[in-house]
Length: 434
Figure 1 (tube, rainbow, N blue to C red):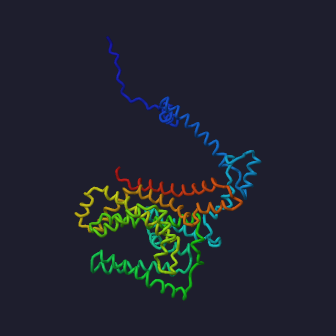
Figure 2 (figure 1 turned 120 degrees about the vertical axis):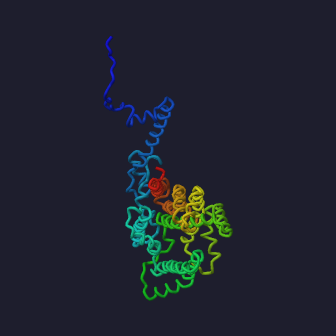
Figure 3 (figure 1 turned 45 degrees about the vertical axis):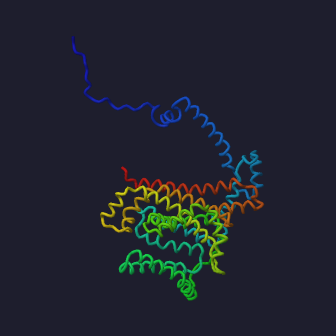
């Protein structure tokens, strides 16, 4: 009997998968219609989404951008046969008041100053957020920007921010001089003491004398004129910028072997975390002046920034402490084996890894702090929420609610979503598990 067996000597050519298993159809079959129950739930969810969009889209696409009052908005919608609150949004209030929502009562002739400040803020953040793409020399501008920002926003003489900068320069040189002869701990104390003496005793008279001789500066703008997103961004940026380094110091202090340092840090963190932020803001607005010398004019925005920074730094400290606790003891032992001292090991080995682990929590604290800036409306500052109340008090816009709150929510979402996306980008860039 003849042998008719057959052995293939070449590979079969590749064939495209079935059209129902790939692409959008394949994804829908695998995720939305994989079973009878999933198919029913998908259809119910789709019907709900279509019902919501059927009411929301016409409301959003309301042709009322040119209206100058709520009455005119309702007249336009009435002519289109769209009655009631669901007939359409009154976007005329946004067109009419968007500048006020952005700048509050900042003088219109000086709008260029906050606009320039926030362009400079983006430039100053570039070496920090995108170090591999930004020119390295920009780091000098980043160091100078914290002194330019208050001068541009509040105005006044240039000698005050320059005097504040000189205090840090004095602290640096005193630290280097003492560190060369004594320990680093004493050098840090000496540098801090020298800076405080300069700021508290010498800077004011010297800045005043220079201002009388060379009065160079901008028109002063009072804090009561700040409002809208200008106020929220100012408080948020400054509090975020200072809360991270303070949180790092508190986290290290809580793990210190020195009992006094440890107990002070633990007491501060637990007290701040046990008190609502609104309570601290009330303290900043009403009680703080009681403990200051008579006649002291302590700026209200500065008081709010200090309280918001302290509040955020306590939570930041616990987030960073979690990152420190997650590191294996081998990292500490490796730093000791290299002969590094405490500060060198923290700067070169321990803290970079702890911060990388803590990125989601740190950014979460930043987002929460930025959203919490809306609480300042309770103490009389006109953030976007406070301004919306003032706008609705106008007879032309009395009754407009959802449009204002929707616009404010959208703007906060843009900022918070940007921080969240950057957090994800940073995590991918620093990922070392692959």
